[in-house]
Image (cartoon, rainbow, N blue to C red):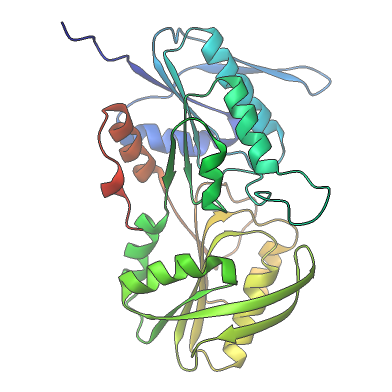
Length: 313
């Protein structure tokens, strides 16, 4: 006798409801009902307003600042486990604290590992995320991690641009692997930027390795935070003879003066995804949705199908 498969239910944290609604629509379902009760001192308590007993619960929440978003996700995982959910899967389009993946100086925490431990302690059974700042973060978990890549939406868009003399560039040495994969698929040349930082979020010197003169350059990165690096690189490339410069990044963190920098920059366009909602306006920024990709992978995971065919890189 075949054991029936546990049903599936979707829920979302407050910060990522805009994306969760699109994901479940592509999946052909509806978001489950939940409530976030807030106390006057800022403390909050999420609760499920329907039974989750014996179900596969998918909780969709990016963990961008403030840390309330991470805490809400942890509380929702705990609530689902205590309500006898069969499995709890955390869908984290943007995994916060991912830049803290190692000890790069004495007496600092490894924030990404701590977040992984917190999620495990809450009782998560599986993690689904996109374009981690460092691939090795997957190894911080003792549960399966489905690591999606935004290349599935970016590469078709790049092809639609129909650019001649295209060069794929990495804004730093750490992103060279990603840039190489894109350039191989797109059959284009590649360039790498060497940047020297004297302190966090501030670049003091940039050098470009590769031929960009007369080229249409596309700079790839996993995120854009203050936009200081990306705009300086674009200016440097245009000064060295590039025909045009575009930036493509999965996560639009866009903090501080990022929007103003992009507006005033030499960048022709900045293409991002909706893993993080935009908090400002800029005509140069174009948003591509990753909701369909997440819906497809969720369907494959739920039905025990291989997800490798969903990845370009």
